[in-house]
Amino acid sequence: MESVEKRPFYLYSKPQITRNVEAYKDALQGLSSIIGYAIKANNNLKILEHLRGLGCGAVLVSGNELRLALRAGFDPTRYVYVDFIVHLWKKFVSLYVCWVIGRLGPVSSFVF
Image (tube, rainbow, N blue to C red; front, top):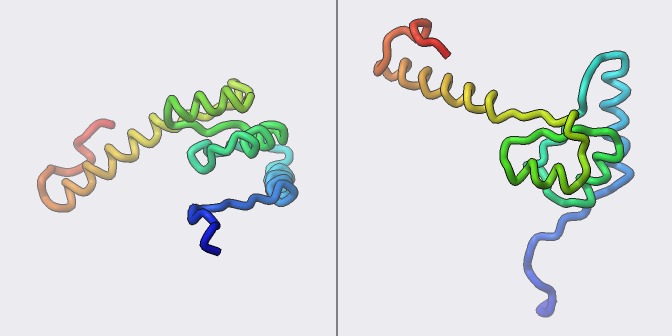
């Protein structure tokens, strides 16, 4: 045991990943949808390529995630950019917290 490197080891099941994606596809059948994988969740290129091969899109928040999605071959028409949504959510939470502690007037007076 002394000779074994002590660092994280991750084991993924390709068949289980496939079953999970197929279950999402079955649940969304008949709906106009994109099953998007958050690149931030795992940047393992082989897993990303497998998800792309299963028809998944890519959910992106940063330039590095865009670079990984391109490298893995995801279809750019199936990208979902969430930076704008995240920005709005952070702005709302910040304003709400300030309102709760009494540093702002009514939140309804602010335009997002």
